[in-house]
Image 1: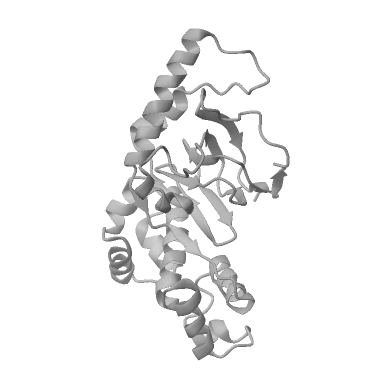
Image 2: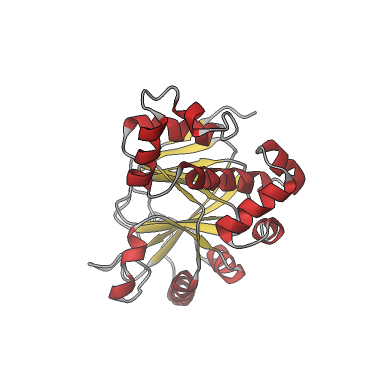
Amino acid sequence: MHEMSYVQALAPPPFVPTRERPVRVRYRKLMADTRIMPHSHAWAQVAISAYGVLRLDVPTGTYIVPPSRAVWVPPGVVHAVTMVEDADLRTLYLYQPPGRCGPDVASDAQEVWRQCRVLEASDLLRALAREMPTEPDDGPAPGADALRREKHLSALILDELRRANPVKLGVDLPQDKRLRMLCEAVIADPTRHETLADWAHNTGASPRTVARLFRTELGSTFTQWRQQVVLAKALSMAASRMPMGQIAAELGYSPSAFSAMVRKSVGQSPARFFGSL
C-alpha cells in the first residue's frame, strides 16, 4: 500500500485558458494515493485519465471517475483529487466567456453545467485530449501552425463535451454535521452496517430524524443514497478487473441482488455498465 502523497495546488497552474486559446491541457502521471489538495480555478476544468481511477471531492459530494468517464468541475468550485490507482491524468482547462458556465452551449442549457458532473468520455474525446499540446505558458511559444491545429482540436473537444451524456456516479454530501458524519462513514465502508438504525447509532440522532434529514438535505432515502455509494465502490473494483461475482460478494450482495440493484440504479446490467471500463 502506498503512503499518501500530496500535491499542492496553491498557485494557478501555468496553463491559463484564454479566448484565443480556449482549451489548455496539463498532463501528469501520478501514483496511487496521490492527493491534489483542495483548490479552485477561475475557469472550468475536465479531468480525464487514460488509465487509473480518480476520486474528486467537492463540498457537496464525491465522484469516482474511471478511464471511460470524465468529470466536469465548474469555475470557482473548490475541489480535491485523489488517485485511487496509478493514473495517467490529463486536466483540460476551459475558457469561460462572461455569463457562461458550460462548454459554449446555449444560455437555456447553462444551468446543468453549474454543478460537477460525470460524463461519458468518448474514444474521440480521449484521443483529442492526447493530441493537445501540454507545454505550459512559461514554455516555448507555439508557432502559427501549432496554434491553428490547437484551435481545431479545441473546437472538437468542446463539441464532444456538449454531446457527452452525463452518468449518475456522484455521491451527494449533506451540510448537517450529524448526517455528514454518517455519510462519510458509509463511504469509507458501506458494508459495516446493514440497517439505518445501526448507522444512526453514533450520530446522536434517532433513525427517524436521520431518515428525515436524508429526504430534506439529499432528496433521497438512505437506501437510494447508499446504492450510489455501492455503485461508486463497485466501479473502482471493476476498473481493477475484479470479477463481478467477487465485487457483489465483497459489497454484501448475492449476484442476482447486485444485478437487480445496478439495473434499478442505472438501467443497465452490471456487465454492460462496468464492461466499458
